[in-house]
Image (tube, rainbow, N blue to C red; front, side, top):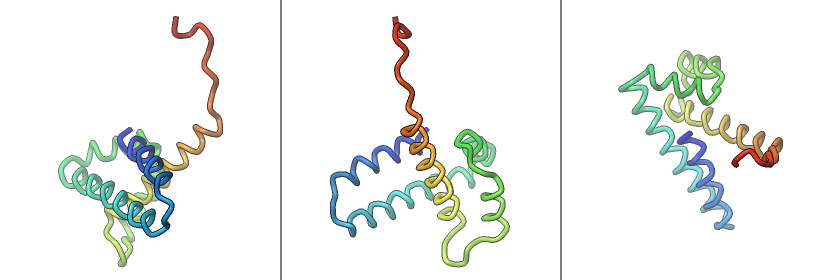
Length: 108
């Protein structure tokens, strides 16, 4: 849920900036924020970390692959953060594509 909120905030900010350099810096900053949270959870509460991955519907094979074969160019935390962000983007796209109309009388 926190990742979805970050993604929505990021998208609002991205709309306000037209300069590609600023967008790249914002993407990088956002990635680092998510990676810091991944690191925090992995170091303090792996059970909660995996619970979050499950709730976000992250493909556990991707996480397993990252953990077994880490990239030399970046930390495991950054690699996992990329997977999380990509998944959240796909979720948001799907929700927008298949947005359901409000059911009349439902809130009465």
